[in-house]
Length: 102
Image 1: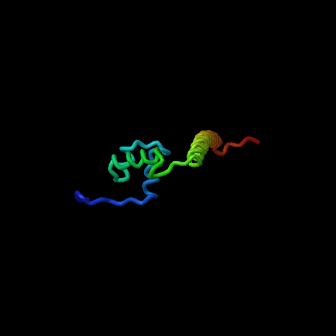
Image 2 (image 1 turned 180 degrees about the horizontal axis):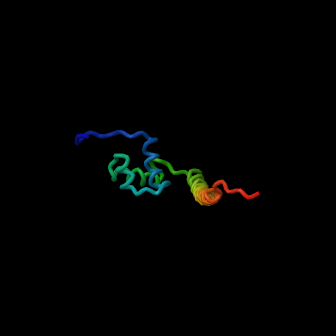
Image 3 (image 1 turned 120 degrees about the vertical axis):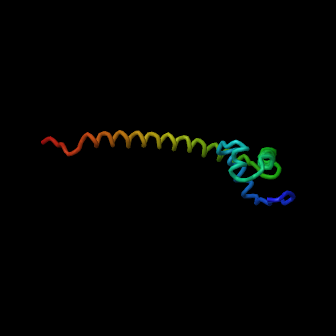
């Protein structure tokens, strides 16, 4: 964009951009680079969200975020267990290549 031209971002875009930093653990600079937003702009949106002006971070959103993080942790653990089980059974079936005893 040329100098002097300002981009307008929707409220939803700003909220999702801030969530990348607050909920998903991205660094502000990394998220800004990925979204094509100036790092200072995203930093301001984040500060506004934390301060209560601009993008509200309500208590119910915080509790939902905590619940989702806990659920995500559990699901990641379950996925790892299933990966290990699949690998175990794959090794077991490789050993049973048609040799049956009667």
